[in-house]
Length: 143
Ligand code: CMP
Image (cartoon, rainbow, N blue to C red; front, side, top):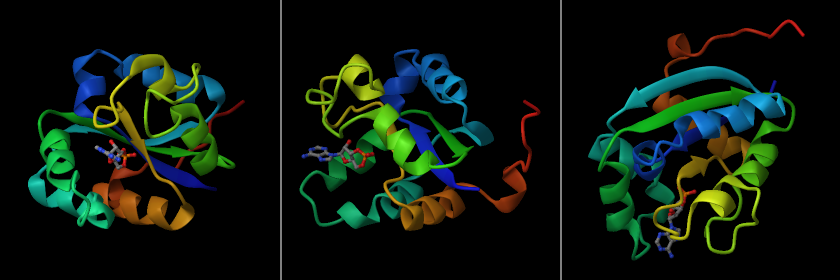
């Protein structure tokens, strides 16, 4: 079964959007298999955003994601990687469609509320960077 990594960033936590965001993935029908609330270290932030290392915004990206606690999650379900990206919306909240998380709650690209893996390889890499196997729960809802 497909899995993706999502992280509610410090702005999403500070603005009290955690419940609302989790609700959107739950009511869509995806299954939560990993969840933790943590203060991100500089090392983890730099590794997670390693692909952006040469970008001018990299230092501010690392500074922001380490500025307050985040909610890290793994969600499971058919097509969850692409579907979660749709639920989240475009990277820039100003151009993200209304109805998406970023479209509904943001206006700033550096404060875009939530991160979601963009492809199967990235999802696998990010899940194993943020979670150990023992922190993931293998279960199926009885529907
Ligand atoms: P995220 O999905 O977490 O992945 C990389 C992040 O970099 C992205 O969300 C944005 O928050 C941030 N980002 C992308 N482009 C820019 C930019 N031009 N200026 C500032 N931040 C950016």
